[in-house]
Image 1 (cartoon, rainbow, N blue to C red):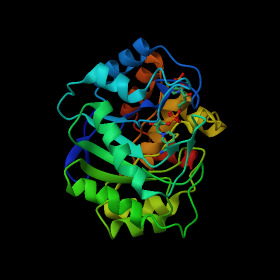
Image 2 (image 1 turned 90 degrees about the vertical axis):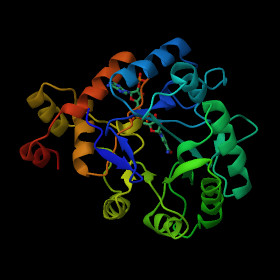
Image 3 (image 1 turned 30 degrees about the horizontal axis):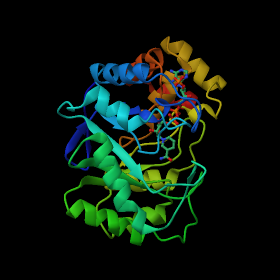
Image 4 (image 1 turned 180 degrees about the vertical axis):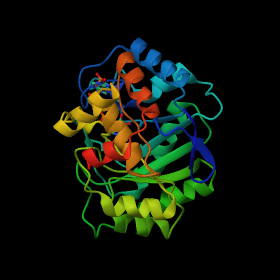
Length: 285
Ligand SMILES: NC(=O)c1ccc[n+]([C@@H]2O[C@H](COP(=O)([O-])OP(=O)(O)OC[C@H]3O[C@@H](n4cnc5c(N)ncnc54)[C@H](OP(=O)(O)O)[C@@H]3O)[C@@H](O)[C@H]2O)c1
């Protein structure tokens, strides 16, 4: 894989990365997966050239016995040169062990400190401010106070680059008046392509667009006829074509497919070498 994207203008990245949310469990706070397999997936990802791992301190199994950040540190620390570990803060733990959106800016510093500690680093490469619930929050919900906290932590040297997740274009514009935004992480994939305004803003500004659920998150059907037809043409799987489509959809798009399976990791990473033709893209449009 060629590391041909520059995150924040200075960190070279391959366009196929890895999402760590599925390592502790395959569902949200579901039964724990085997931590040994999780560590093996992480090590194999790096062997395959993955240099961008997306995580969060709140990516855990339902019983909290398996945690993505712990697996990453155990498997990969001391981290190889050039590996970018991105994390996100914002959602807060509820008393029943779930997660809920909060607009309280005071929760952010402890969350950043938790990520520093659990990942075992002095500075985080990329921290997203994740806002809203399942859907982005209303357009008129200001991100200013929260983004100012993260911008101050960046000035302090605890964070290299800042990102935003689950946002509308107005949130992105507001945040950019406070500090540079290096990446946006929104819901987007081959079967959900309606985030055009944010994607266009990212393209204009050279901001990485790093969709969550690049494979539909296991919730959306990625087996449509168009994907199947192009997959057959390439001798590839529909998920590989969905990832190749994502990368072809914009020069600033980066993929972070999530898996706890070695076989799926190999399959997803290999999608980085599929070159879709104009005919393929027309069939997929
Ligand atoms: N910012 C946010 O709000 C937010 C929200 C969700 C996720 N994320 C981030 O985005 C990353 C990607 O999203 P995601 O993991 O939720 O969803 P995803 O990558 O769209 O899909 C993951 C699901 O697909 C399965 N899968 C993966 N590769 C496969 C393959 N080759 N063949 C068949 N099934 C396959 C996985 O199961 P197996 O594990 O069994 O392979 C898992 O159930 C996450 O890991 C996380 O880092 C961010």
